[in-house]
Length: 170
Image (cartoon, rainbow, N blue to C red; front, top):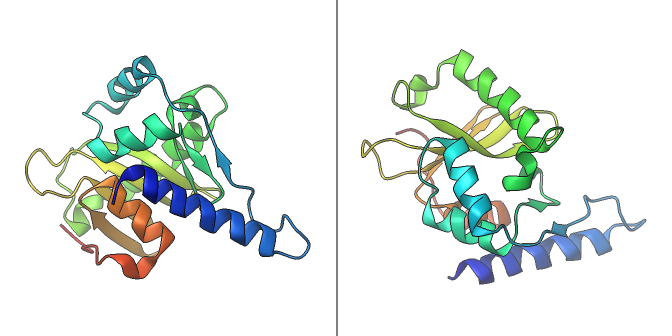
């Protein structure tokens, strides 16, 4: 499935949930942002300290982040002062302090937050395993640990947890 279709399905689900609430608006309001410019993607890649996975790059080329899920899916603009990137960095520091090697994350592997929840207790990281594993994304927090090969798998799992079977450790 193409990234455009995945984002479209996710957005449709969010909109249905939003309007199904009584009163309208109890669910988070979905927000699709303008696409990230190529220059912004290069800037984000420098910040990440690793190459952006192709699916995440495609996602950001469609919408520079997405709101309305239990997670804020981060884009380049979230790394501006006061943005969600600060919350994501706080969660990253918590994870690094707890020792992610317990689930197989190689010591010193770069972890770059691509999503975080509002209370900074769960997040999704782009991870550079330097060929150690094919998985590039790690969802962790609140007792969960899931590894995904690509960002499309992460989005599919967010939209329907039964859509794929992620690994729980590397």
